[in-house]
Image (cartoon, rainbow, N blue to C red):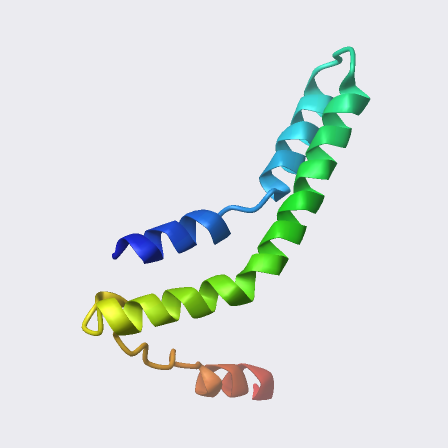
Length: 97
């Protein structure tokens, strides 16, 4: 992948929700002084992550599209993705009998 795609995936990859999960695991398993502070920091991280990713989603997507279209028109990121097959027959057979 091109560096622009890697940077885009790095920014929009794992979200701050992992911070909340780790804080909850810590708080459930271990009694520590300042547990409320740890949870508050984790929740603030999640909030700021949602805010930052929400504000930058559209501009970053447009910038990546311009970069790839201009600098790398034959990049692997431009490969058309075919529609995934759907198992309609399987679903309808199961529901009828």
